[in-house]
Length: 74
Image: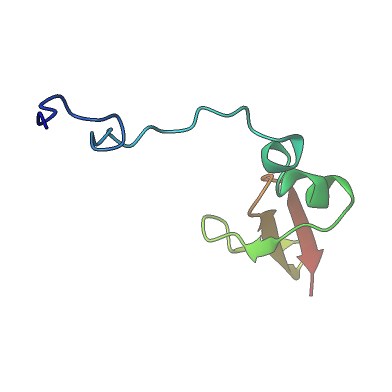
């Protein structure tokens, strides 16, 4: 019997191929839909942490996901 010298397709190792899939709509909108429905991720703004307005202490909050700003008086 003669030995087969050519490599079989299953013996060759291919490089890892990255999948180029189109992102799903759920992946693209992740985190944005929560803010649109009013569920923001409020964090105290470190740039302007406290502000005085009409003699009261005011804290400035910014949303981590969308960047919306709100203030609360104490």
